[in-house]
Picture 1: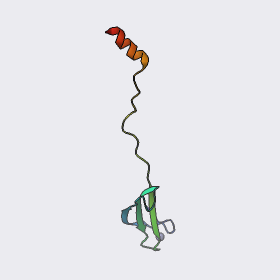
Picture 2: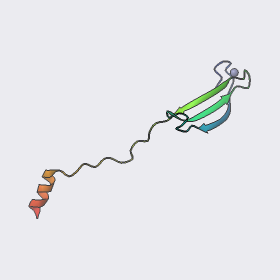
Picture 3: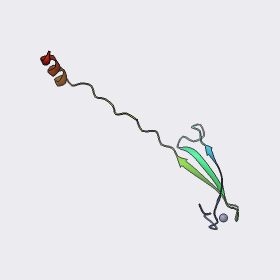
Picture 4: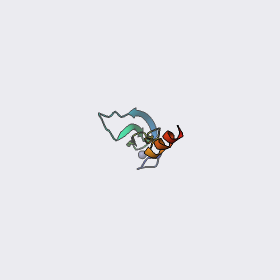
Length: 72
Ligand SMILES: [Zn+2]
């Protein structure tokens, strides 16, 4: 990534975890610095809640149950 001010390639300083107590909307912050004009840049990574890994299962319908009873 290039510096906003002078266009020089920024130096990656490190990634830090952002905890919920600090900010609930972001989970990581990357800091970068410019070797030429000494600008300091932070990139805050947006956190999103994980999607449910499974589908909700609907209850069996009354019609389905009646069909099972008839089959007996
Ligand atoms: Zn710069």
